[in-house]
Length: 172
Image (cartoon, rainbow, N blue to C red; front, top):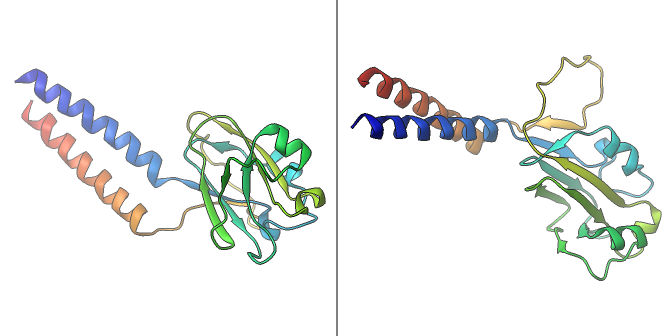
C-alpha cells in the first residue's frame, strides 16, 4: 500500500511540474511591433530572442499579401517556397508552437522572401531562465500569455494537484 501512495505522489509532482510549465508559456511576436512584413530585419530580431521548447510564435501580417511557410535550411537559403514543410498560414494572426529543440526556418512565398521575409530561429531545450526586471519604457517583443481559460484551468489544476499531494502526504 505504501508503494502505491509513493507512486501516486510521484505522478502528482510530475503533473504539477508540467502544469507550472504550461501556465507560463511565452508568446513571441515575430518582428516585434512591425510583425511579419517586408523590410524587417528578422536576423536581428531573432538574435534578441531566447526561445525554448513549448513556447509559441505569432506571425501578424496582411493575409492578402503574405503567408508563412516552414521550410528546410536549403529552401531558406535559396528563398524556395515550393518544397515547404508546412504552411502555417491561417488568417494573418497565426500561431505556431515550437515543439522540439532544433533550428526552425520560415519564409514568405511569392517572392517576398527576397525582400527579407524569412526567419531562422534556434529553439533551445529546457526551461527559460527566470525573467529579469525590465525597464518600464523598454519595448516588449515577447510577452507572457494573458490569462485565458487555458491558463486559468492550469492554475486551478495546479492548486488541486498541490491539495491532493498534501492530502496524500498527510495520510502517509
